Amino acid sequence: MIADYIVVGAGSSGAVIAARLTEDHRTDVALIEAGGRDRNPWLHIPLGYGRTMTDASVNWMYETEPDPNCARRRIFWPRGKVLGGTSSINGLVYIRGQAEDYDHWRQLGNAGWAWDDVLPVFKRSEGNVRGGDDYHGGDGPLGVSDVRPHPICEAFIAGAEEIGIPRNDDFNGASQEGVGYFQLTTRRGLRSSTSACYLRPALRRPNLWVVTDALATRVIIEDGRAVGIAYRQDGEERELRCRREVILSGGAINSPQLLLLSGVGPAAHLAAMGIAVRRDLPGVGRNLQDHYQARTLFRCTRPVTLNDIMASRPRQAVMALQWALFRKGMLTIGAGYAGMFVRTRPELATPDIQYHVIPFSAERPGAGLHPFSGFTVSACQLRPESRGTIELKSADPSSPPAIRPNYLATEGDVTMLVEGLKLSRRIAASEALSPWIAAEHMPGPDVRSDAEIADYVRRAGTTIFHPSGTCKMGNDDMAVVDERLRVRGLGGLRVADASIMPTVVSGNTNAACIMIGEKAADMIRADADLS
View 1 (cartoon, rainbow, N blue to C red):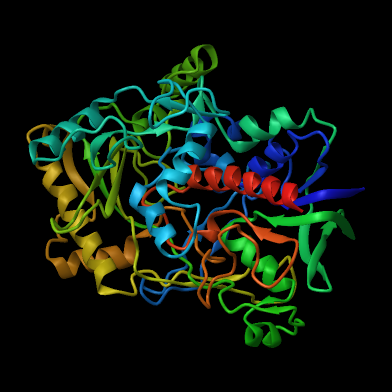
View 2: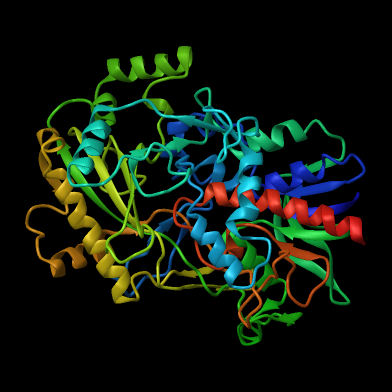
């Protein structure tokens, strides 16, 4: 088979692109995915991310290199390796970011990416349970639903209001700032991954060919143009050719890795790896950004947390029945329940920190829940100043790349998180929330001064799983793709995923990646009509 288009990566962006392109029955699309089909039931139960986060059968299970700014720790970076990609294993929080994020992209030279340009694309993708309005779509493929109130979250919201933070019932509406409940990418109690809501309907089309368990090893480049993909499947080396374009949607780790393996990237690094240079692009793998988080964990005075349910077999059975019969209960929650966006300094124009409040606690993300009643208040930086890199360790495609996030490399990043933890404590001391708290478990009462909090941030902070920026869009010397996501200096090759973000959006990244997939499909179709 020779396809018109080859899409590499069936995740938050790639599944969208493949589904949208095949809406034209004259267009043949091959979708290549390193993982398998999404048959594991935990991929469809919202709370299932607690299991799939550490399941190597659906997860790349990456680790960073030891980070010198974080006590030389290796930090675990789960990424989806399955149909739906990370949208199949993420925490389900639906946040687009701030309008100013996209206007900033436009100011960097990326025409067509301002807020007024992308809002209609967000709306088209969205099937919000609240219906459509000026900011939301009501009939798009991506299910977006409300969560039910929880007593701890109610107390947190009331406590934040006590200290002057306004209530916000729609973080994706007119303004992001304030405190309230998140919406989740769920529909009728099931996860809305891009596999479930975009790819599954498209699989009925004869012009879509999905190749799973296929590790892309390089882009085939001939005469300065991408003409296909080499991949490894069932122990065999295979090739697939295309008539028009190859679109890389492997995410902020795998897309730059595949470009480097294909000879596209910084010439000196490629030479050091013994890879022939096809195109010297110094920005490939650079500009890595991620949202770093520091968590405050509290012991709860009442047995209303998920910890309590999981410590009781009868309560576990009730929870399972609630979901099986009614698609309700704690199995429908995400990795954020209540949320808050605030400014750590009054002179800032928009919020620079985000909070996730969840009615359970664990020593670290992905670990077992505590044996005591507990809940978590996580603070994460929205616009990190620090920048890292993705580089090859080896020319072997099956070898994971070197991930160097370079967290907390600036004093501003550290100070912002210190202020964020201090704000968490102010809310914990409020009249509304303090009756729910028996004690602060982490960082604990002995960590008081700014220096001690900063040390805790470095020792115990971690990713909130939003890597981006490693194939950035723009027109400067470090840009990898242009505003139409075409790889600079090569024909027939685009990148469309979180890696193209010149700056990471102010919030969870899944919604933005879906928008990028929608917009990429629009541009690919428009450019094909002009050719």
